[in-house]
Length: 169
Image (tube, rainbow, N blue to C red; front, side, top):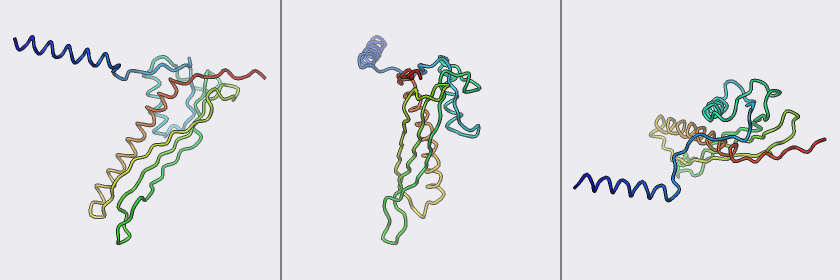
């Protein structure tokens, strides 16, 4: 009797999840047959973005911009730690980490397929002079988390992009 109850309960939970539209995040389908990612070989964002595109299996990574239907160009990248509050002794108590990443997508002739855009991520953290090592490690973890989040947001935006065909000259 208990096993029947458990199976019934599990079926109801799964049906409820399916009814609300829940689905596991799968790979993304990009609207380009091939794309060239114009980033430095040492870029963490570039390496993670290339890995995510390879995993999508719907878009081929081109070796040269001339061979690609689209080229992804980063336009700006800025990491800014911002002090939010100070203690009465003038020491930092809270920080905000801000990560801005600008990009654009162009065709082989240099015309915009997707207008230049930017993503801005922020994370807040408390700071304590007594825990300098721990807080430094926490800050590094937050920066890495923002890099991962940035790549996921880029993939979502690339997949959702409706590239406008460039006007013929």
